[in-house]
Length: 116
Length: 112
Image 1 (tube, chains in turn brown, yellow):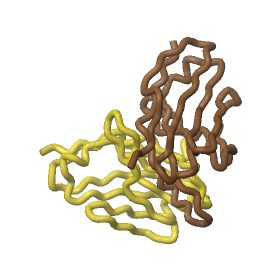
Image 2 (cartoon, chains in turn cyan, blue):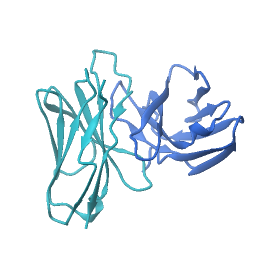
Image 3 (cartoon, helix red, strand yellow):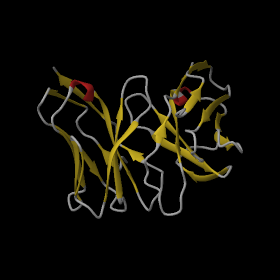
Image 4 (cartoon, one colour):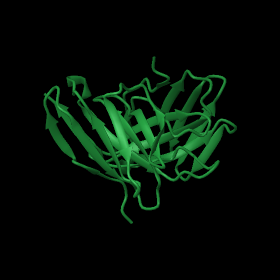
């Protein structure tokens, strides 16, 4: 049973460029959340996708956008990259059931983005 | 303003002894708390959780205690094992949301 998979694992970009990160959720899961983890910090919630729509959003600018596909996989796009966007980007999946959300997320290994 | 705080960045204990990891929160609306463990080059993995209607939850060697009046929770690991060496994150949420607010993490080292 495949867990959460993310790609690429590492990438380097320069300021002003755009990046797309990809995530496949754990088998059977339908909800994908994205978190940013800067060095020495805990993960910070970016947004969550369910039924191909953004369901919740954290305190991130519009340069951060996402998408969820019919097969539940998801992409995170960041435009006009800044040096401060350098971080580990974590994807987490879960199964949305009415009244049964527990906050127990399954995380991937992350995509480490370096912006030069 | 950090809503979930793990004030000690690291802890070192001997194998077999108790490890106590602490976490404080400021948002009184939080009603569900979780601990995640993270090994290097891996994503965080869920360890244990507690609802605000309880003050204790136990799962094997892991016990989480919640003191709502003090807005404080702690994770006890007894006995500690070298394989427990990892970074531990405290997280909180409210109203069944999966928008978790994490602390900065604490690195636990269990020495053989």
